[in-house]
Structure formats: C-alpha cells, structure tokens
Length: 472
Image 1 (tube, helix red, strand yellow):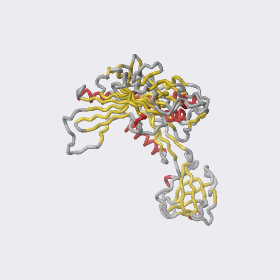
Image 2 (image 1 turned 90 degrees about the vertical axis):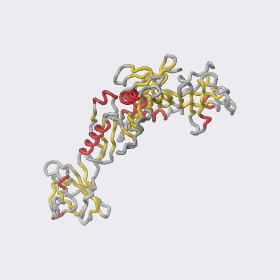
Image 3 (image 1 turned 120 degrees about the horizontal axis):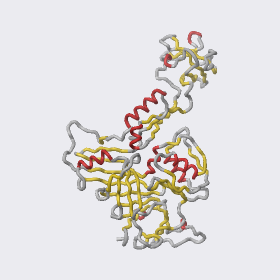
Image 4 (image 1 turned 120 degrees about the vertical axis):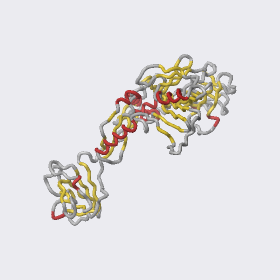
C-alpha cells in the first residue's frame, strides 16, 4: 500500500485504535480548495472481520479520528461521520449529521401577535367601558389584573385604520371573559385607546407580549454535558416563526432528549411478519468527513465587519476543534451577517473565502491534517503538469504520488490544444492550457482523479484518472 489508515479515539479522548489499512475496503477520499480534507469512505465486510467485530465497530467507533498517512506524513484526516450497517437484511444508521445529533440546543423564535382561531364577533367598548370584546374569546389567558400590562392589543378596522392599547383585567359581557379592559399606557394608569375607535368596525386583532414583541427572542442554551464530553460540543439552533417562551423551552428539552446521543436508527421501518434475512453477510459502510465539517458545530450570533483575514481568524477561534494555521493577510473588508439569523461558522468562512480580494484574485482555504485551517491567495504558478501520455508530474518532472497532491493548485495539460501563453500577459491563469484544480479524489490503491474549476459538470474529459508511475 502507498498509504496507511490509522484510527484514533474521539477528539475528546486520547489513544490509538489500530491500523485499518488492510480491512478498510474501497477507501477513497476527497480534498477541496475550499474545505481542505473533505469526504472519505470505506466498507467493512466479513471477508476480513467477523460479524461481531463489524457490529462492535458500528457501536463504538463513530466520531473517532481517521488519519491517512503517506511517505511518513499525514495526507488526510477526519472523523468517522456516518455508519450504515446491514445485518440480517435490515439496515441501521448512526450519524453525526446535525439534524440527527446535537447535544447543545437553543431555540430562536418570535413572540408574534396572536390572531386567535377562537375569534368571533368583535366590538369596541362593550357596556360603555374602555375595553374590547370578542364573544368567541376567553381573555383571561392574556389579562393583567395588577401591575404593568403584560400584553398589548392591536386592532385593524374594516376601513384599514388601526387602534391599539395595553390589556388589563378580563370581564364578562356575553360569554365568560369575552371582554378585556384597555389602557393607553403600560402602567394601566389611563383607560382608553391609542388611535381612533369611534364609529369604527373592528375586523381583526393581534395580541402581543409587551416584554418580547417585536424583537427576536431566544432561549438560553441547554446542554447534555455527558454527550458533549464524549463526542464534542455539537450546537444546534432551532428557528421558529412564532411561539411562546414556554413552548420554546419545551421544544429545546425535547430536542436534547431525542438527539443528544447519535443513536442507532433503523431505516425503512419494519414489520411484525419478520422480513429480515437472517444469515446474510454483515457489512458496514463508513463515511468520514474532514474537520471542516466540525466548524458548523458552532454558530456566530452577532454581525461583524472587518478585514477578510481578521474575520477568518475570529471565526476559527470560536471553533471547538479547529485552530488557525497559515492565515494570509487580505485587507478586503467583509461582513458576517448573523443577526437576527445566526450563521454556522463553516458557512460564514466559506462565504468570505469565495469573495476573493479587491484585486479580483481567487482565494482558498481549508482544514488539513492537524485540525488547522489555512487561508491564502490561490497560487499564480503551475505546480503540476499532465504529460501527453497521461502521466501527472510535478515541476521536477517526477510522477506524482497520488495521495500527496492537494486541491487548490494550477495544472498545465501539455497535450491540450489552443496554443500557449497569450500575448500581453504573463499570468498562468490566462494560459488556455492551465486549469485550477478545485478538487482531487484519491481512490485506493493508486488512482488520482482531479476536477478543474469553471467547467461544465459531467464532461468526462474534466476528470482524469492518473495511474501512478507509467500512466498505464
């Protein structure tokens, strides 16, 4: 093998779990110019391991660190992100995908005006009181009998005009508590309305909480510390259009109960008739993800404008597992817009990278082995050449070791038509024979595929399979 696959404990623990090179069948992985070490995967079968060993792997190794090394150095690193186990004809799944696993939760919501579905006939000032009546409503749930008002009411009239006030105590006109006193001030010192009600016909209304409307609200964070101590802190924000504080907190608790641990989930349901196929081979499909994926375990909740490189550093610092590596200076001013809608760190960093700089240069960045994020201007010189016979070589004309080529490089196709460097420019980016490699894929045992940026997807000539050495 030209590579080794070593497995280590989860990032919250220490320890090596062995070399899995020989049993990790079909190993392949990707690197991207934006993202760095990306996705990978392999499968475990009964050709190499017992059924018990495969099931044990499924039960115990999700979230562990996988390291590919070549030539005495790390060439790819990530987490075991998702397992799909097939046993007795049934399929089971465990995953670190945020929708199914999160151990620290908050709920962001608005506490909106409430147009209640119990609405009936509406009227201003029943019984000569400064009040509002809805004979289909029970206002006791919104009343304030003492102290400052807790709710406001806003009424829209049939002619489009509006009136509003603060709610006091509820009382009965036709049905139980179908009316409520209204005040112009939150202290409930002056009875009456803000706006015109005389000779107006109310058509609809909304009730809002005084302390919470109309700004965005959020609960405190709630965490299952046992789960985060084991797997790392996976944050998750549930965004709702409108609810009450009590309902938001209840939803937060339910999310933690259901998703704090990456539980095993059976896919496809089941049947009381016993549809399994006992005795079929046990297999496990393993998906790995580079540490870039863990950037989205945390959120940015406030907006900020700064230079691009300063923002990148700030965002990476907020990550749990990734640290800043080589961060080149980029003076272009950028903004993270995270208020009122929070933004995941990885998504925010990707947005900044894609903006490039003020000179129109391409920038790139990603997380590589060692869990460090590098951010830099894309190269301006060719680093690799594809010979007319299909062999990929470096600037020294040595064949490329398939596991060691990264994305974010310039490659010249020496057999490409279209002439050479155009007149009046010395930039390699202008040479029609040169392409920017935005993704590479290594497929065991020795195949390297690359993709060039800016090309139509699905065109086979854009993905070259380069055999190590002779090009056979």
